[in-house]
Amino acid sequence: MRKYLVEFIGTFFLVTTIGCVVIAPGDAGAMAPLAIGAVLMVMVFAGGHVSGAHYNPAVTISVALRGKCGMSDVPGYIVAQCAAAAVAALAVGFLKGYPAVTPMQIDASRALLAEFLFTFALCGVVLNVATCKGTSGNSFYGLAIGFTVLAGAYSVGPISGGAFNPAVTLGATMMGLFSVGNLWVYLVAQFVAAVAAAMVFKVINPDDV
Image (tube, rainbow, N blue to C red; front, top):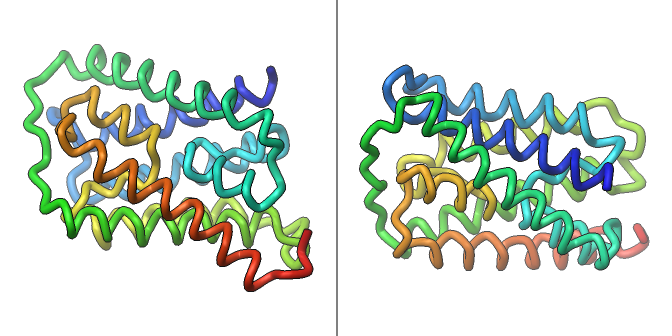
């Protein structure tokens, strides 16, 4: 239960921060990715020793396929993450005064590739800095994970919105930032990337079990 609570808290603050810095009034403009990367970094440091600090169903799937998260924990993690995203969306609406939000218009093929690439990068970084014997005990894992999202948001945010996370996708859709009709683009890209990252990790680190 402690693990699921930590996953809920971390995901809640991640999605709440995203909504607060992206939605007007009071949005952070070009500085938004810095706040998003920063909150992910601090939440990873805060909860990593309890749950692994996934805060992302794609990361949970990737870590489970890598063998560092029990398959029996996967449903609980994903439920906690998605529930947190939904509650965060409600909190952002209240905090912002329920402003009118226009969903982002995307090119499906470009957004699909953008979300795949940086979800793959995020999952790969998590696997290599937070589950790998060669980096065991390091003090930089939270910074590496947060900066991956920061780099992705600046790189492809204008193309896809820079979710890289099915829970974030859910929360952003509830906030009106993404169109319901485009959900499949994000979810397909993110979950395929999670599987691919786990497979590539095993190829690169065949002896790390």
